[in-house]
Picture 1 (cartoon, rainbow, N blue to C red):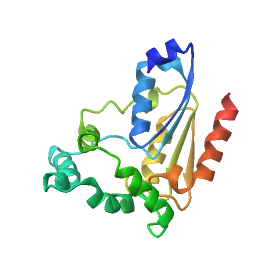
Picture 2: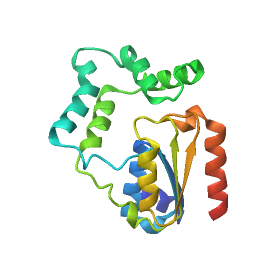
Picture 3: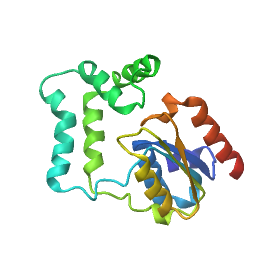
Picture 4: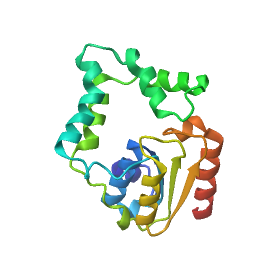
Length: 190
């Protein structure tokens, strides 16, 4: 990504990441802090550092077992989708998310799951010196508001927004509120 910025003659960027994307944004910031103007970290976590080896193995096993049993992603994507959104009765969001999940390739899914338990570089929150917006869905069970509050407390120049009625995918569940918060934040620093 740094090479892309160089090729496009872009000096600094505003990085927005959700879930694994927020972890990637933190990693990019750690490698290239001078390239990042602001960060928006949504529905992310503190990594797996606090997990025991057994807990890590169980985490991966639970999420990869359907593939090992010969299932296709289409067979269990509705279950994943329901676990990620705050209101599983919202058919529009559920269908949109299920369709999106159905596009994921098996290998990519497994790599993403395993990356969660890999050796973690995610303890760099206190090193973030740029303005940061931390957002989380009020009903997020995967990365709950309590985790977002911990992350917010670690980042010196951050603000926390909790999106009511949303689960783990606030950008899909509450797109207007998500866009409003992100745009207000970006306008403040650009």
